[in-house]
Length: 105
Length: 502
Image (tube, rainbow over all chains, first blue to last red; front, side, top):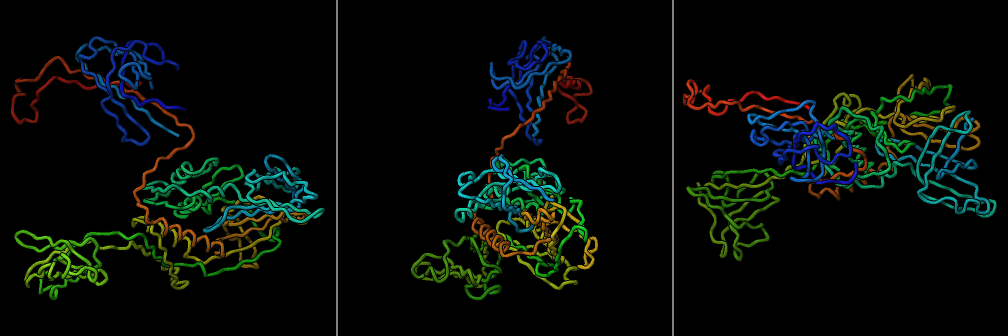
């Protein structure tokens, strides 16, 4: 690990099920990006980033991927996760993404 | 036969005239050191060596060339002497532990931290080039420890003493931090491999009661005097020497007397001082004078005096078994870097454990063994000196490689058990005390940023949590329209969450 980037500020969700690969710089098909509401440092050597979506935010979307970014648009992607299946939002569900990073020496 | 060789700056030399290595570890020791002598005929080695070059010494019995590393360090001194055919060159220096002695730690406080983590942190923050592969975890969590103006070596020693560990920098430039007296060298010294021995027992270093005096702490105190009953005249005698004094006349509305002054310095005749503090006598006197006015209160008036009293942090600990056996021997440790009772207790406990029993020291001239590590244990079985399979800690190993000793496999002299303090140790002790005093005024609120070179791993877990808000809404629904009812609901019809771990 070397260099530095600005700390994560946003979590994005998307609809692409494209397999994760190193070198990716963004989601396959981003639908919406929300600001991180909570940064939890209460556990040693761990940080939990939490972002929330209301039912109307992504109503009708089929969520297949999640990414963490350091900007509201563009920016550097810290991580990307792909769902094994998909999660369909029909306007009746809230969504919360919790991204946990654990650090070890 | 002992074979030995030296590599200086990765170049092998086999024409040394004499080599000696001294490796030692104790309460107040120096790191290992070496001296190498070369014949420097007509300046053969006049510009071959330079300061800070790496020195690796290997020695083995009946293995040629030698492969066992017995010392690694750096050249710190180069000395030329003689002339012509008698020219000599002497190199000397210390092992890589010397680096720990030369660097002063950044001021640092650790709280509730496991001892080996403190050692690692001190090393990462202050030292480069020495790895930490053999820093073993301890079962000791230190409540609070303060480092201020200490060399890294002395700081780690402080931790090691509390944890009952010992440490050294090995021949691979790796810091070893291991539990004391538990690592066996596997060696037994008896009449088959000891050429000469001397043992002595001394009670000079026995201490079975210790008084640890730390920094002074100020605590608030309040004394209430009924004038004429609890005092005489205008003088109010306090229980302790007062700091930050505040004098109040109690009444329906309290009246604070200010400003105050110092007895024999401020004069109420010419200065507006309502009361005078006599610090050495622990007294407060209400004044009466031309400028100050009449501040003396009539009998029955209640005077409240708030002040801070300064209390030294003292922890006393003793070992009755040792006192019964050897008589009372008291040691006072004054360390103004100690700011909490827990810290003082840790220091006192470790000191008593280390010093309650008498010191036995043995020096052994050994044959047929070259590789020992100070800090490890060995068994000594020399019945004529009252040593019947006794287990000792090796505290010093001294190698003298010369043609005679090499031929006789007798280059090694070891010292076992606890080291009896030498003059050098006493100087070191005084130096440490002086540093402690000089740096004790630094505030103990210390912020540190620790930087180190290495790799950090990151693992991630992503949780997607969805929860349906339902399609209904509780509002004026029968059974849910009762005010203050614990079972009455208002709002959307929420279901449980679905959690997907990625």
